[in-house]
Image 1 (cartoon, one colour):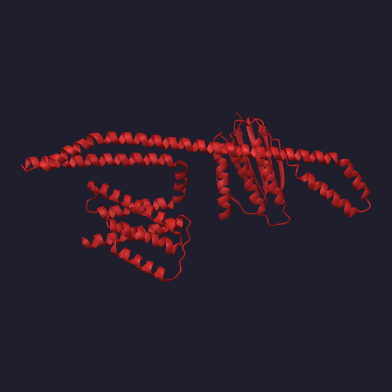
Image 2: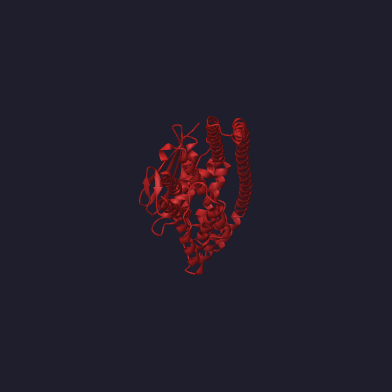
Length: 444
């Protein structure tokens, strides 16, 4: 019995360390080490820690410190992570592991079905929970970022319910002990005092927890509201700043065009005087074209933010020798929120620019054409771009190389999330040298 308990304790510590390695790799840390004295000492300490094992249920303080120390050394010497991140990762992982493992152990203690195999079942369930969580770590991390306040509420409520359960369980056990003492004529003064105290806790504690829950939930909900208001205020301020800059740019562009038109007669006379030298004429005309070129990309779609986005993207296309063709009418789309306008068009064009920049064949023209129209109660946006990289589309999702998958994945998911609010749909078509994304949004 003692031998099997020791083996399970060794397996528990081994599982604690192996799962930590899996978690660090899943978080994106690269396994690297230098075969030096620190690495050797850490490896020896790691082996000794596994041999000593890890018990179940109540974990003594010295074991907790040992678990923290070994995970900290793994971060420092096997992954070369800085001290602050090593401490945070070690403390959080150690505490969560102890909490989950101890909770499973004590729950199974009350179950009649786990008797005889308590430690084995605890070890298996604990492994399954951590393995699943680590396997889907990225998905769970995104859920936490988007819904963390709601998760706090669920966690707080669950802990309080568990506390009430244990209080009721302890009160029942003390009552049974009291009945046993009475039946056997045993002195039960201490038991009687404990029973009165437990009864008082059972009657008052749930109400205290209820009050605490209400306060915590109120705090969380206020935090959510404050965070949303802050994000909204930041977006509005950013939007106003962008509008102001755009108005300045438009004003400057108009003034420049006025100067060009005003000087047009002078330009024509100068060109005529230089007609004997074709080289000088070409140079002079190019100078005029360069002066006008910066003023031609002024858009009037019916939405100021969209005008700004198109202007900024046109500059990026100009820098990367990408032909940028725009034909967008946004006049009937006031129901679409500013943040969704930014998400849809910025990601749509950014993905197209990314694809064009990957073209390494000089015979392939780099171009982006984005147009919109209103058809049978739908606002239709069509974005077409040239490409030569391989793209796989399954279930309207993009699968490319690892880098492309990350970039396009975020962009496409963001577009889908925005148009979903308006019952819209995104359709993707791909050919050898052309990629087309089409958006359909019902017009209110």
